[in-house]
Image 1 (cartoon, rainbow, N blue to C red):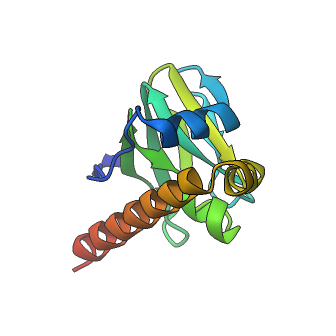
Image 2: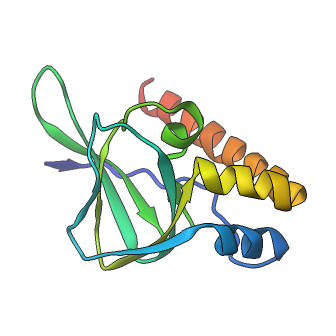
Length: 144
């Protein structure tokens, strides 16, 4: 397996009212090192925000069948945003690189935030937009 990790520059702040609202609505989940969190091709219904530890995203090339690490997701970063917002299938298999604590954010969490804490929801959507834009830029640069 070749390792060519990308680090997204956009990270989540672990303080402030918006994060507290998100933390109150989301579900804290724990994964053991090497445990698969989500599998490439599976239906997606949530995203994860890494609170402690790191995760590794790997894709399998459809033509060659070769695995390639595409991202290391450290504390303060998230993954699964497209699955959450676009209801797309998972684009990578993500496993815990270490023991991992994450915040699971679902459509229900988003709806609750929109209703109970609209300002926090707006902050979350802005952060998601920045994260996705940064990922798009990194992808474009990697494929030049």
